[in-house]
Image (cartoon, rainbow over all chains, first blue to last red; front, side, top):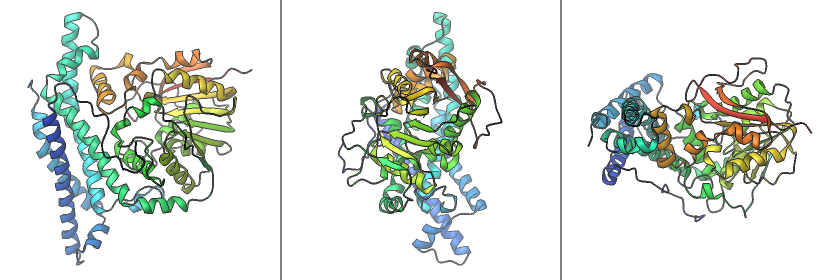
Length: 97
Length: 385
């Protein structure tokens, strides 16, 4: 392995029998996208909470914002709701395909 | 996050990074809460069908084609691997943003312990063949110009991987469990020199060093970047530990050098050929009366449920742990005996949730209480001369 390039890939990535590689790719993309949505929701939450506290939601203020326990509990519920919604079809697929 | 940072080498997450890491952890928890039970049922159904047909306990060879047909199983494999890949990606983003800062913090570590790297070191073939746990660059990638990047990546991701169930950010539950096991079985041992094989970033080694403050404590692993981080991490925690880049099959230490040699969840990352050689090397470098202890994952093939087998199959094939199934099937006690050890025992040890007390014993072996509650331990003593 080159000492200079930061490795980005996981090798080897063995395909599982029965798993359609295109579906596998899409699932990976959808979960990556969902993580971005979840992060965006939390960034928006930081904006709103800073605004309520009378603090300007500058990039620095948002980056430094740390949710308290109550805020984190609300975020955890939101995160769970997003996961339930996005992943429900995975669980529902309990049949031979 | 800074408020909960356990030591100064742990990469700090900013707002968005922490949000992403929490998402990954929630996704992994979602899989185990929502998908695992359904896959468990599928595995049991497939096992029952195999038993009905052949009258024998089913093997993975019989289970695999049954499961492969099922869309839920396919989704489970994809989701599991996606969770693992997102974990590495989110940890890497966080670490790479602050590589320079982490290298600077490493440079300010107290000058205690030692670090010995070998530019000619050859990574064992079994580790070079695959990125263990799907970690890009695995244990041995070394950034141009050196640095602690790969160790930071491992430490950050490990604290996510176990969802905080292996001792939080110090991730030292396995080390504490090794200490509990040594107290339990070799209560008289007062080691003056200790070695951990495959110490990675020193999570377990710092814990073991804390239990035996009089001992000189050494750790070996295969990656330069990993070991730079381990040395700086330990020093910032006030632990004077000695790290060296070396191969567990041929450590290069003199004969009869150590009183205690241990490993922690490492044997399953070796190979069928390496495993007996590692036991022989432990024997060589231990003084007569010295103790060898290997901690492994709390699963034994002979007692595995159908879902345990399917889960082990995932680790082996799709999470790049090629020797996982081999190690949980291996007769570790038999191998230790063949290497010359006496007073050999193997079984489940209760996980230690903090530094164990020498005078409080939980018994050994105990029942397997499951992942993060029990570990499998195999240990023995080199005969007195």
